Image: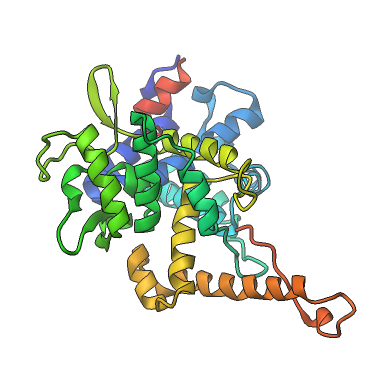
Length: 349
């Protein structure tokens, strides 16, 4: 394996993720993780396209054509939305801007990157969300008589109730829970923004059962991870990867008993579902926006759009094809080794 110092690309990735973003920009771990994910996907894509070892990927390979092909693959192969595609591009641009100020040989890449345009969606992007029957069916797949089942059920119930991102969930500590007459959970969101979200009584009941089993006699001011795994004798926060896998598995089981369950269940679907249910039950979009921790109200408007389209789809299904109204309807479908060591050293994983 090449030494890290011999690779300008990976040396700068390391400095960017491990030093610049956390120390100079003071960005939150979640934000840094997003930048890291974008760069990891990019270098892995170049590696596959060139059929070379990861450490042989260089700046010179980051042409406008390869970056465009990478962005296209996010949509075609990974099912990413246009907004996710554009976010990945923004992360790559931020990194290249950083490198061009530190190594003159990377300026050519910055010039190449200007040829890659932000993609405009053809229409307002829709979202995937679930009915309460589907969510209930998924949660019921976790056997709460067993420790793992109790943990996973509590995780899913709390994630839905809070409308939380998976990254916010796996970072929770015991001290982030606040019981009392008005129970709340404190979440650390994007950009290091903190928000307090109320919990339903049923959620607190599950949490108390969970705490009794996994945190017996633990003071509520403890900084111990709320949801954890014991790795080599040490208590570690659960990873979002582990929980994504668990949710997908529960979703596949639940679909056998409830046809409302989507074929692919992923964490953000719980957040979308909570937001849609709040909006459909009369909560003002401004309050939904605050609940979700959106920096911009426009981000929350997708739920109003999706609800309108949902109603339009229902009308279309209920309208015979020979009805004059049918042609005026526009129903929408809601879609909303060594190499591992190198990735760890540079902060990509």
